[in-house]
Image (cartoon, one colour):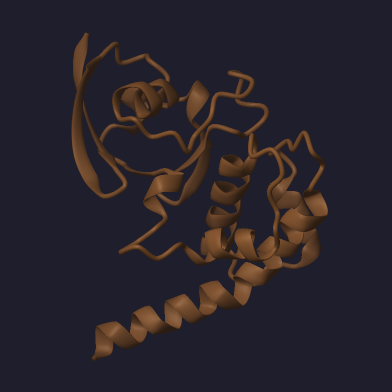
Length: 166
C-alpha cells in the first residue's frame, strides 16, 4: 500500500492503496463517486470515462498512480453551485437516456469534446463518440443532446467571461 494524493472534482484527497489499482475502483469504492461505472473492465465500452486534465480517459484501465497530481473530473464534478453543466442539461432536454449504463461515458466524452471543439460537425460528433457503447442504441438522441449543448456551452462560457470582467 502507498499513499496516493489525488485532486478529484476540485478537492484534494489522499488514499492509501496499491498504486496499480484502477482509478475507477478508487473513485467508486474509496470516494463514493458513482458516476463512473464498471462496464467491461477492459476500457472498451466507455462507461467508466472520466476527464483528466481535459482528456476523456477510461478509468477502469488507468492505474491510480498515473493520475496523481492531475485534475480528475467525474460526472459529479460537472455540476457547479447547484447548476447542471450545459452538457448535462442538454441530455435531459433531449431525453437522451434510457437504461443509463453508458450515460456517464457519453456525457463525459461529450463534455471533453465540446471543451476542445466548441462547434463540432455531426461527423466530428459521431467520430468522437464512437468509442462509447450504448446498449439501448440511443445514438441519435445522444447526437441531438450534443447539438443542443453547443449553444448552452457557448452561453455558459460567455457568462463566465462577463463575471470575470465585472
